[in-house]
Amino acid sequence: MSTLHCKKLSDKTNDAISLLGDTWTLAIIGSLAKEEQRFCELQRSLDGLNPVTLTQRLKKLEKEKIISRKEETVDKISVVYALTTKGRSILPVIEELEKYANKFL
Image (cartoon, rainbow, N blue to C red; front, top):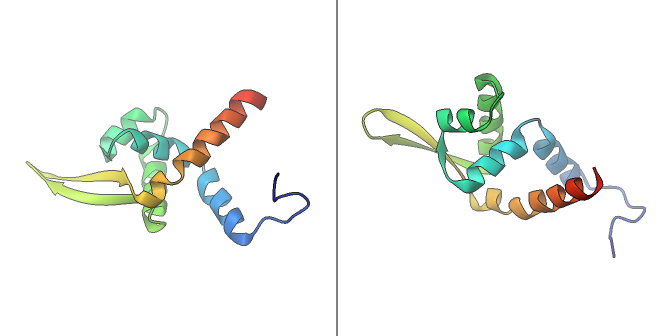
């Protein structure tokens, strides 16, 4: 039985909805769920996402500790993004949201 029956959502729940509801955020998390990626790989995998928006979303997700940002030096410095444990904990929520969308929308 749902605990939401006639109940106002908490501020933390509204914050989570606000964070995850940003355009492209769920797509970025979904892309990083497959594997860690560099900026250019993420941009290529998310057709239509401009670099400014990608940068903004990545900074916000990093600030919230949903993704990690790691600098690697091979031939040149590159930055690799990956989901953190906190970020991976969002994946079941996204899967349930996708089930809902496929069934009702």
